[in-house]
Image (cartoon, rainbow, N blue to C red; front, side):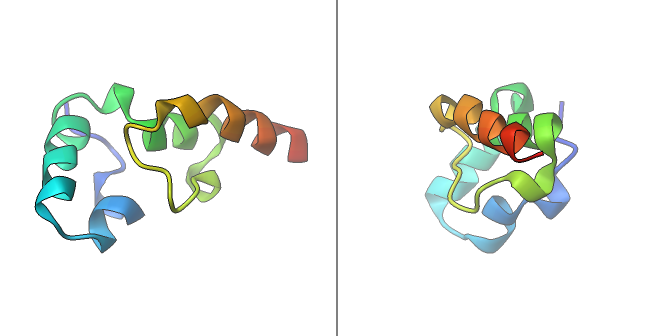
Length: 72
């Protein structure tokens, strides 16, 4: 499964390093369901993804979603 957000993902399309490429392999091309950025995008929209959210920062997802929902 390839992540449907891969083309417009700010994290992967603005950074360039070996570490970023490895993350891309694991999250975008391997198992996008576990990506924190994708979880936020699906819950509250891509525009609510913090620029500094790294795909493995799943511990932040709940707080980001709750904050976004409380603003509505």
